[in-house]
Length: 250
Image (cartoon, rainbow, N blue to C red; front, side):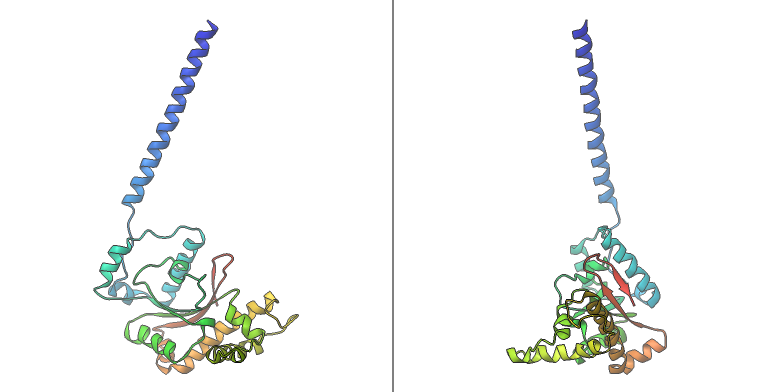
């Protein structure tokens, strides 16, 4: 009799395990179906670009950054977006970022093909070519927002703080670039050692450097300064934290 009950118990357990396995398969199937049916983000249209305000774009970028931090990026069909983009481009913003390979600008804001212009230069400083590109993005292509985005642990800023003599190593162009960052070093309040090893001081220089670049852009481009005064665009600074993935708008 005991053997019979043991056998029945094995059958019940086996059926329960089978049911669980079936449920898991069903759940997996349902998840896969939901993913397949989920809306895929298409590229930005001219109408969408026109109807968005600079503040609304900042809000969307903040939400996109939240998605990035949560590892919940929007599903995109890049092949389809690439084909759509052939018709034209209507990016909502231009981001000036450092060349640092650890700062994937589009991903940081959960964006895809055709969403933003991206300009890169070590230390996210402005020059004639960068400002000209920004004028094209805003005055010609209709972008409503200019972002100068610095980032923590910026190598260019660290070398500017430590007075690296790039010219002595026959890198005159790099020396000129570091010289553009040094005014931000000089204006930063000193707390402790003036060294890139002083993380608080370095982060403050990174912050000040992004703000200074924004100010320099307004001086270098009367056109963009005028568009900003009219409320048609905004020029803002931000800092990307590489440890957390968060972007702080200044």
